[in-house]
Image 1: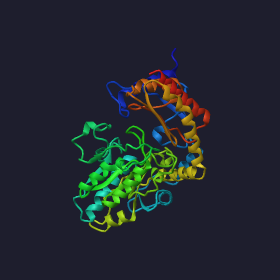
Image 2: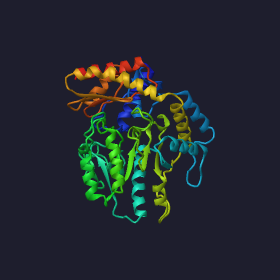
Image 3: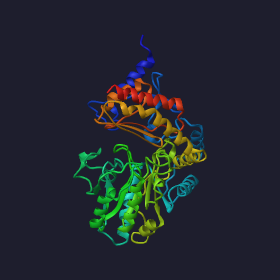
Image 4: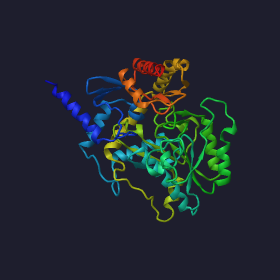
Length: 432
């Protein structure tokens, strides 16, 4: 007689294929998925008892690992009080405390906090802030945005318009989205010698079209989903200067780069600049529950509120969800009350040591590491489904995309676990 547990697993698998549409997947030719029954520390446990070392931090958000007792306790404590209350006309301690912490740790001058429920929505909020700011100042012609090639800012409608329109994930929608300006991805790599020619196209665009431009939006220092490109902080410094020169707002999308991932608390810290608006999310709650925030300067908030209608026109239902805010407070305390810089530096060292051999493998274009990010870039795009299965066979969870095999492990990962992740990457890439 067949094990009833196996029957249940097969039934769930069949239902998944029939009903569930997974991210970036086909319903007619679905890629394989693996059922998770538990997660602890850096391990994801599958229904057959197989455990995988997570090299993705579940799309970069689980920085403290899974099932963390401190975050569990924060969630349980808050849920016994109240799990949600509308933020229109009401407030609560978790949101107030979290706003105070974010103002303290983000780049100087970002003193107003607007909460939303996902990173993509926080980008929508940032774009609306910039547009409403210029409308309030009577500069109604400033309605377009500048973004970088290879940039990625989310899957919602406005966010898609500032993603790379040709090589990005949203090229299918080109011509349907708002028409934005795009400049080349920074050509000066992180650590390379700077030359002003690296930003000449941005300066040229601003010199001719700044009267149309509301803001420049970019991912500081690391372009993530667009190919894991690391670029010189000097580009960010010069971009800040050019924005000031031509009276254009600067929006920093720190959803992936925030909270220590690059080796600085925020990507902007590498250049010692402050944007006018910043978006944070992903690791904000340690991956426990979706929450994001858009912070802006007093100048932006005063401009918006100083003219009709006198309010910012946005308000998500789950804005400042108390449960999410309580967990975020605990997550930030966990991060900041330890020597996180030393931990990220250790991960960076181990990634450099563990991935260096990939430089000698056929088909590898470049190996690069910054903070807790390790990247093997190939000359050709990979078959994601095929490689995903190979990584599972190796006992690790690594999800490549395009021509990139990369690691963004939880910060709690131990040296031996990181070695196993790197070895798995070398073995799978070597077999291509």
